[in-house]
Every structure is written in structure tokens, then in C-alpha cells.
Picture 1 (cartoon, helix red, strand yellow):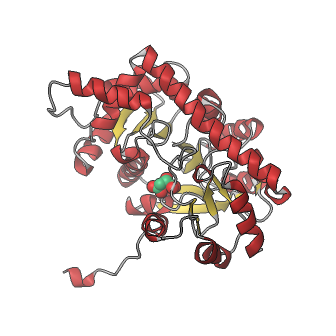
Picture 2 (cartoon, helix red, strand yellow; picture 1 turned 90 degrees about the vertical axis):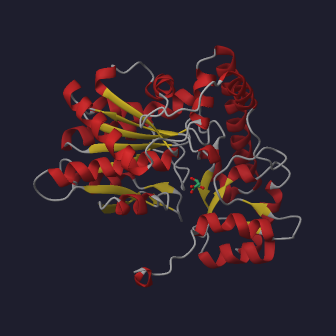
Length: 392
Ligand code: LMR
């Protein structure tokens, strides 16, 4: 049986972790996979998370199963942070998932299940390019058809908003539109508020269903600011999906902490969707891992810990934006980095230039030219600027 399998390439982005680790050059720069790093290059456990872990260790009296929905209080406490107000419980189904990837996979399977039961042509999932390299494989793994449109031009560093609108005018009612809520991965270029409003109107008018990927809330302009666009879209439509990740804004990457929220037009449909996502979760991972979500719950249930977490998140965001401003000030051709937000931006480099940067300058970035700016410090900004000059 297994002879029929085809060899799969290692994931290009995740391979960088090992390549970087094995590089003996002391001046090496890791701008690869998307994790926050502090001024010393470390990805520390947040102090609020450490405090929550101590509390969990002291108070947890059982590791018995919680059920396919995971920690219900966790998904409830996240809600006002994501949606800004309490969404009526009879209009919002939320489940804890293993990371944002688990939320996206569950969303994809929900869409596929609805499509399999329905009549008519297949639903398409619209992805703007470039996008996170895992988006299309996740949709394809659930059997969904993907359509793409150009979202961002790497050479001129501009969002191709008119192309996006034209493409979405060609989408059919019921099609899914995946939108990056903030801190676009990989481009770092988000829609402005007028563009969000226009997208909200467009998806509402055409009966499209938004699937918002919100994985970096708080790392762009602030927790509230980073959710504004998503909320405009969510408010405009009867049905919407939102895949959330706490992995980056709580720094709990390997604990895999996410949630899928589905907004539905009626209480009856909410219940229908809830029953389906629970049954799909059961067939996938049965129940999500508890530890990370329990930590987020402990933090958000305690005003003091929440304030500490927010302050640490503010610090992470300020450091990333400081690096962005230093790059923009250090080289006029990098001015666009100062206007973009989040951990990532795309440098206008060819694959060959990316290879030379790695080989000759020990600068590691994704093959697309995506850089994780959190991998830099004010001290290493000039090193990147010099290395880029050398390959141009
Ligand atoms: C990234 O894009 O670097 C992160 O989201 C990590 C991942 O899973 O790809």
C-alpha cells in the first residue's frame, strides 16, 4: 500500500529552523519562522504566562476530559477581545482548537461538509496572493477548491486593492473569502479602514462568507485597532467564520492555542453549526490540548494578570515597530517597512538573492523574501541593511 506514496518535500519554512540551528557562524540572523524574539534574541515565556502556569500547577485538581469544545470559559473570555462586545450566545458558536491551524482546518471541514450536503456547484475559497503558504494546503486537504487573486505587489510594495475588488466581484454567492485580520502574513500590508468598509459592503452585497484569519492581534497597532477591520466585516454579514490564534500574542506557540468562532444568521443555524463543528473536532483530534488554553483562561479571568499580559504585548509590539522604524530610517529603499505592521514583510528579493544572503551573509529568511522583523534588534539592523546592499 505505502509504495504508492510520493516523497514529500520538507516544509520550506520549518526547515529553516534546523538550517539556522546548524549554522556555526556567530553573526547569523534568524528572520525565518514567525516567532517573537526580544532584544537578546530569545523567545521567552511571558511573565503573565509563567504566573498562570504557577497558578495552574497549584490549583488544577483533575486532568479529566473536557469534551470536544475544549475549555468553554477560554472561548468566552476571548470573545470580547476579538469581537469587542459580547456577541449573543445564540448567534456565535465557538470552540477551542489546536492553534490557528486547527481552527482553519475545522473551518475548512465545516465548509466541505455543508457543500457535500448541498446542491449545486462547488464552493470556492478565495485567497489573495501571496498568503501564508499553509492556507491553500489546508483548504485542499479538506477537499475544497481554491481560487486566487493578486493581493500585494512585492516589487512596488502596494496592496492591489482594485484587483482584489474586481476578483471578488467574480465570486459566487456562498463562496468563502479568506481575509487576514491584521499583520498580513507574509506581506505586512493590511487594508486601511476605508478598504475594510468597502470589502464589508462587497461581501454583504454578493452573499460571500468571510473567513477571517486573526493570528497576530495586538502585534500591529494594538488589540482594539487590530480587530477593527475584522469587526466591520463581521457586522456586515449574517454568516462568518473567524480562525483565532493565541500562539503569538500570548507567546504559547508550541502549546497550540486557537479557537474557531462561527457567526450564524439565526439561533437555529448557530446550533446546527455548533453540532457540526463539535462532531468534526471529535473526528479530528477528539479534544484539543488543554494546557495553553487553560493559561489564557487564567490570565483573562484575572484583572491583574490581564493587565500584565497587555503590557507585555504592548512591549512586543513596540519593539517590532521600533525595528521597522530603524530599518526605514537606515535605508530609503526600506521606507515601506515603517508603514507596514506585524512580524512580517516581504523584501523585494529573488530566490537567488535569498540564497546568497543565507550562504554568504548568514541571513536566514523564507524563500519568498519574507522576513520576520522580530528576529532583528537595533544592534543588528545595520547588519541586515549592509547584507541587502551587498546582494543588490
Ligand atoms: C509563520 O508563518 O512563520 C508561522 O505562522 C509559523 C507557521 O506555522 O508557519
